[in-house]
Structures are given as C-alpha cells and as structure tokens.
Length: 364
Image 1 (cartoon, helix red, strand yellow):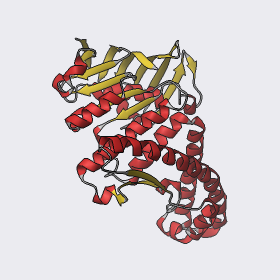
Image 2 (spheres, rainbow, N blue to C red):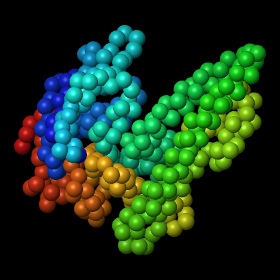
Image 3 (cartoon, rainbow, N blue to C red):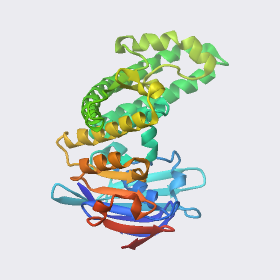
Image 4 (cartoon, one colour):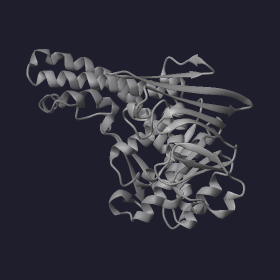
C-alpha cells in the first residue's frame, strides 16, 4: 500500500498543493511552520477521518476560507483509488464529507482499512510519560484501522456517555428522573464490555511483539511488558459498578467509571516505566510499541501501512535511528525534517526529496 499523490486546497496553510510521492522513502524538509506536518496530517485525515492534533475541524481550514479539500491517490494490491475529504464551514458548525472514487461515504467507519497509516511524532515518544488519554488514543486509533466495528462500539459508547453526563447535570438540581440512569448504565455496559474485550486482545498481542523488539534494541538487557488496565476490571460487574457510583456521579455531574478511564501500563524489568524509567528507557519502550503497531498491521493479512515520521528522527539517537530505519525498508515512508542532515546520509540517495516553504511544494 502506498500513496502516489496528495492534492490539498486550503487545508491548513496549503493553498493549492500537489505532492507527488514515491513508493519508497520521501523526505519533506524545510523550516518550522512551513507546512510539512500539514501534509502528513492531510494523509492521516483521509485515512482515519479525523486530525491527529486538532479537536476542531475549523482549525484545518485555511484562515479566511470557508472550505478545505484533500485528495490522496492510493495504490493497494495492484489496484488504485482516490480518497477525497472536504471540510465546509458555516457560522455555527463545520461539516466533513468523504468519498472513495467519488462514491460518498455515509459512515466514517467505511474509511478504516482503506488506507492504513502509522503516524510517529515526537509526542509519541512521550507515550509512556504522558497521561492515560494518550495511551487510550494509541489503542483506539490502531484498533479502529484493524477492526472498523470497534469504531462503532466507541461511537455508541461515547454517545451514551454524553447522554448520561447530561442527565447527571440535570439530576443535580432535580432528581425526579433518577431512574433514567439505569437506561444509560445498560447502554454503557453493552458497548463498554465489547471495547474491553477488544482492547484486552490488542494489548496482549502488542505486548508480545514489543517485548521482542525492545529486547533486540537493548541487547536483551531489558524486558518490556504492556498490561491493559481497565477502569472496571471485571466485565461482569460493569453495570453494578456504575450503579454504585450514582450518588458520586450526580454530585460531580460526570461519569466517574468506565472504559473512558482505561490505561496501559508499560513495565521494564517488572518496574513501571512511567514512574521509574529513565527518559532513554521511556523512549525505547515507546519506539518498541510503535514498531509493534506496524508489525500487527503487517501480520493482519492486509497491505503494509504507510509510515508517517513527523520530525521524529531528530529526537532519536543514532543507534535508535538506524534500528527504526532498518525495520521499515518495505514500507512507504514519509519523513519530515528541518534539514536534510537530520536524516541518515545513506537514505537520502534513494529518497524522493521535497522542499516545503510557506505551504508551497518544491521538488528537489
């Protein structure tokens, strides 16, 4: 699987850009804030239907414009197709629409698996050090690409969670509808238990793969384990746990327990890496997890993913750079950097080099 071209109009600072890409290594270089990351973001948006760094779609539309457009030309299993994404703004809301070969997609889940991507950015190196929300996002984005039905479970869960939280805020003033909480408890239990089951299987699998990668990087000096930490450990008690939290939830106006509080623990030699690991150990663990993510996609019987490396090489020392680059030789890789010296010299000769300046593309 690889992307042969990206077309972007008024997406972030890209006024009208055509970015031809090679099947192997592509290097986007230029000063900071020129638009390199925006190109990677455009690919990610077409693959997963959302931005990896913006919560509001308005941020994706060029300042002063009312709409943005992105197209990626995808080659997969001897076939080719186009994924189009459009964002339209009005005074009160924003709409996003997607299509594949001009056939409209009604549900975002239809995008998953069409274009598989793995994004690796400096923030991913902080995966262990950051809060649980980042680790949940790491799980969810990977699983959605492997299992589109998982996205439906997540959507159903968060819709029910929103409704339950709205009811809780009302109950703080008037408890006459308190019996209605049981309806949303049941909805959260149904989708929550399905999500827990999928997350458990995913973390077990990625832990096994990451353990081997991490052992190789550290020359067998360290052993890495990933453990899924569900907020409600036993699915059988999911609803009862929600019921026990009714009084507290009404007081706070929010749902205090559930899969939206889950986490992953990274342990090195049996010790939690977040609390006791050095920065080097945390980065190596994060690198192992991201490479395991790629390996899971490879082993899923689908086309290998497109790898997006957003200024991450400059954050790794020479040995980790070399290890990363030797593991991805069979993938289309799109690398951003501020200067060509940020990329190992031996890779430049075979790379498609593109300069990005003020949102414009210059081929080298």
